[in-house]
Length: 201
Length: 84
Image (cartoon, rainbow over all chains, first blue to last red; front, side):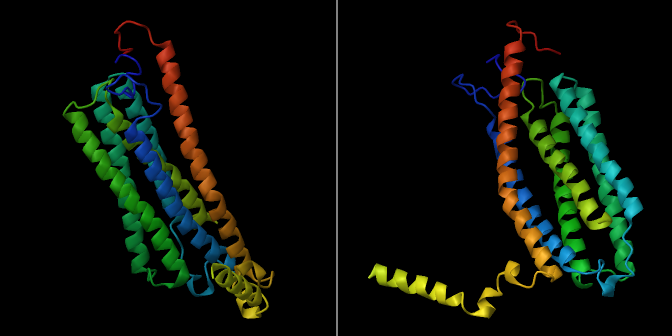
């Protein structure tokens, strides 16, 4: 049972598995999530490339908060880094560092969501809503779906943080942290793509 | 009997290609200057590529994790030291 103790892939019979069931499940889940967002991005491409002017003529006065969202992008990327450091901490058995880095990651995720929410409220007050034509629909659906995924990731992180506080993870057993980190990496790496597509192009 | 139905379906499909409105249902067959054609074209190409990218990512991840775990296993000392 001492073999592969970093990732605890060893079954009860002592047979080495190439990958743990939890990790495989999260990878398959991410495959489905990628296809979901690919469908939304495909829709965006049809509207964006199918339109001679972007934003469309009826929404030309809408100004998306490019600068603030750019800074928010850095916040989310930073949370990806702190999550990576949290993984490193538990691999080295550093319980306090794990808790601190998980907390920091969650905090950065909440800051990202709060800034996004604040900007959305401002846009809605300016009359840019979900029913503001194609531009409004694709913006709120695409960015909203990502925000929903970040929210789910924050709750997942909270559960992992509670587990870490209770001392449930160790050098030998930390697959819970690993799968949460994979999901967090997905929401972090997806955001720059959406930011460039929706805000910059 | 099955052969008759099959011939009927194939015949109808061939006939439908002679009807311009049915042919126009394909976005790539519309006027090439229309921007919506470009939108559909890139969207279709993007979505066609995604399953291969997803399969590659999952397969690559499994391969990387497998190789990484083997490397960790090979470099691990035989004692019970946890490598802290």
